[in-house]
Image 1 (spheres, rainbow, N blue to C red):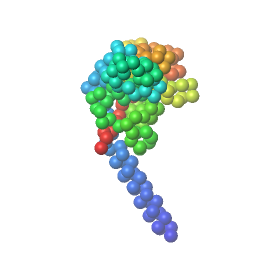
Image 2: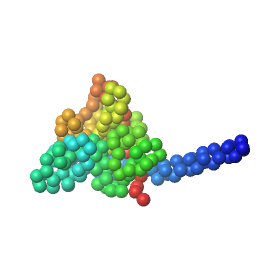
Image 3: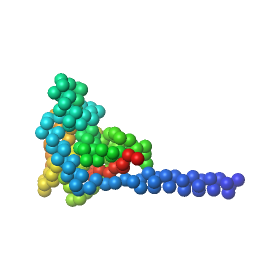
Image 4: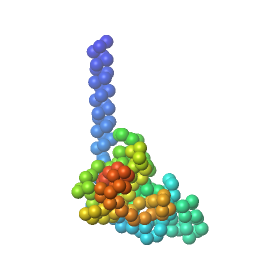
Length: 197
């Protein structure tokens, strides 16, 4: 009986290891070209003044058409922070999918916390580049949003985000080592993804 129990758990562990390896085998990291193109796309959202909408996933083209057709910005059309990030990367890579939890399931749309925990490679400040991600947290340490880094200077990180406070997609910045940085920046990361099969 003991030998069968040990064999069962050994086989189970082997299968779980193989499934986990298969699930992560097709994970890709965004290239420099893809990050650059995503940044250009994000700047268009700023230029167009795309409205913030909690849970919003409206593409830039659909937003422009929707507003022209009389849809209400921020009510009928708009984006939130994770919607913005997914949209700007999907402009070049439409089949992009993300992990909703550790090892899966794989979904088309996930929130900022899932992008932070399961779909980005953590970066030090000196590794980060334009087109990488900056994540925001609340006082409890929960991820509440993210932005796309637009540039980094010696004193600050500039980023584009869909801001609930501003009601629109904006470019803003955080002073490195400042109060906001220390209390609200969870970290920096490079987006990772898988492709729909």
